[in-house]
Image 1: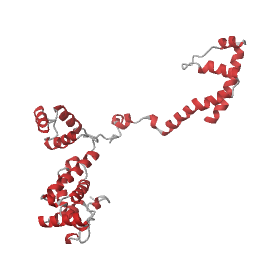
Image 2: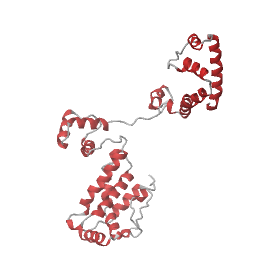
Image 3: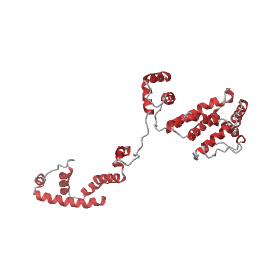
Length: 300
């Protein structure tokens, strides 16, 4: 597994001097990275307190670097617990490292607790956020209660089979949520990825999502055609009608534009209105339509 540029930044504050190991954070692959961080020595409580005070009082970035480096193995250990979500191990570690750096920045050595205990919350918080944003079922958990249910359901569920009513009731009681919420979350987590296109070229193609999710209306030529029709019906038609004399326009509008269903006035009706023969109305209509066709050609 080759490290990406993002993965090569798993240890953003390291240097060739880092704890005497020549650890630069550019180790080629995730296995080499894990092996390297596991060889980094842990700090004693006295060393940890001293470094934390240097960071707090003097903004000593060297002290911050040593605090981060000595706890990288903690991030790796926590990341292993989230591999079941199908996300890259290196990405989980990278997000956890961000949480570790936030913890180091906020750590108060006077509280009397070790950094490892304080940092676990920040590391897990960053990993949780990454999982919820990038897991294949996006937006499965939005509220605090749903997030708690999301992670606890996966860790408490045994195998791929559906949970029994007894298991559902027990988990709902444990997490203090409604059993309906447990059922809903399990249903959403049980979803499977579906290939957009069929992996074969046989009759199964017609049942692949690509066959019924695509829309002809989104096809570029269809979009252009629809835009052209809209332009013809509005601007083009109005321009063509404006070039007719009042009588010709009245005849065309009465014959073709009066009703949406195309049932316009008859030739005889218009003949009575204008006091001419039906044949004369037909001739005026034909001439008007020819003139309009010429005007509309500019829009085609």
